[in-house]
Image (cartoon, rainbow, N blue to C red):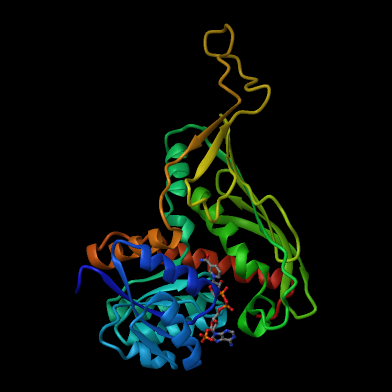
Length: 341
Ligand SMILES: NC(=O)c1ccc[n+]([C@@H]2O[C@H](COP(=O)([O-])OP(=O)(O)OC[C@H]3O[C@@H](n4cnc5c(N)ncnc54)[C@H](OP(=O)(O)O)[C@@H]3O)[C@@H](O)[C@H]2O)c1
């Protein structure tokens, strides 16, 4: 295989554009082909991103020998079928989040990848971003003690309902699927698999949730809570609270291109504990901002990370078990709030 991963892009929507710009800026990726349901969309997309091959048919892209990896950027309900088709065509697949609608679908996708000997992974760009890795390292270094609570939100407001895949239940839209998957992924990344959880949500007239709040409990007593929505605004800061301090991540999901940052903070008053041996407790600075250097294009980082999985065999960032856990809880929460898909 070439030293650059040759990408085929399925779909010409919003995230396909962002990812393709990322591949163009990546060190180890090349844009080989794009496919759309309409030839004209494929042509316009190929022109915008200087992609040599434009196809008006997804299957035609999968048949090409000059494509090593396929990026599935289709609506949620189509991830299963097109990921499987791409794997069976011998392609590696980076499939957008949420990976599948049901755990049974996700299981089948991973089984097909195993049989085909190909890499398949759920595209959670934030997972390979240096900001997330730095926060994980700070926690592993004990900077906030034992993690007891994770608190997240991922909300935005959109008034575009007609023609919006996020408001279409037949495409498995909704806030939980669109952005709740991040809250679940991040909480589980730091705390492991939940032992219990519950959610309450509001169902939009189109039949998808547009607001959802939930909690999760974990072995050892840690808890997580989240709010996600497509009709409400929030600061979307993530908090990781430990016995010795807490971490605040102002932009957890799409870190700033000019450099991620997080805040290491201590409650005020900082500590109630008496220090060992008595005397005055050392008082740490209440807030320290840790500024990280610019990391480059968000999706270029993701494309390079995935190239490492395929070309160098580095372990995937988002494992099968990880994706399965998210898929199971997304389905449970959907059922709890009365969604039919
Ligand atoms: N990782 C991230 O940061 C991120 C951000 C946004 C979205 N996403 C995920 O990416 C996926 C796509 O989201 P998006 O925002 O890019 O959506 P979008 O702008 O609506 O694009 C979806 C594309 O899918 C294709 N498509 C095939 N069948 C379709 C149908 N029945 N209805 C509508 N489109 C159809 C279309 O491409 P053609 O017309 O060219 O065939 C369309 O442009 C979702 O799974 C979403 O969760 C991820």
